[in-house]
Amino acid sequence: MDINLTDIWVYLAETPLLWLTLTLAVYLPADWLYRRTNALPLFNPVLLAIIGLVLLLLATGTPYATYFDGAQFVHCLRGPATVALAIPLYTYSATLKRMLVPLVGALLVGAVTGVVSAIGIGQLVGLSDVTLRSLAPKSITTPIAMGISEQVGGLPSLTAVIVILTGIVGATIAQEVLSVTRIRESSIRGFAIGLAAHGIGTARAFQMDAEAGAFSGLAMGLNGAVTAIIVPLIVSLML
Image (cartoon, rainbow, N blue to C red):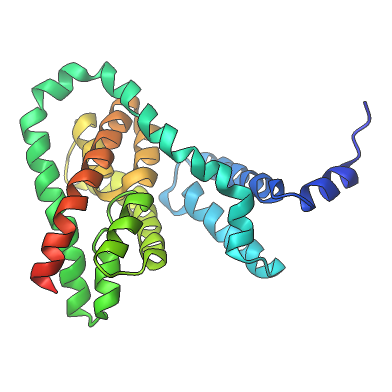
């Protein structure tokens, strides 16, 4: 069967599927480059893909809403993907039981530190009140963070950008920071990454090993729940 590339392009250009296709087309070379450079943090595939897509949208004058209409299928898969993180965690249930108490302590300290440090540093550099409220839930996954931001008077769209940047930075420097601090156990490394860098960090943790990824997914989910509770309280105290 003959394949006419021009017909395929015309079809894609007339349907929202175009932007889903281009998202994959941008990400796959970025992932290839990342692997070819021995997982050099500077070439994080999520970072490269975002930069590539932003440049493409700017060059074509395409509104983000138009892009999202086509790429939202990937967005819809985030929920099932997050739930699926419980499957690898089951493999390490014995480790989870052994470390339950210290992990709960780390969760509480990490969640509070993430919110307080974000607001505190923002106040020191003179950020506006709205920006501070948008910045508070930066360390949790985007859908939860946007809902919290709206609840406390922030800008959900600004929060989404901050959350993505937080995840990219965390995924980029996490392994090096943990190595400098001589943290070797995979479960601890993964939990720390998920606590600080949510979904993007969890993807990076799975590249390290399965145990790190499983505990990173656990931290991401628990941190979302805890942060949803503490952000309104901390914001009311600090702002």
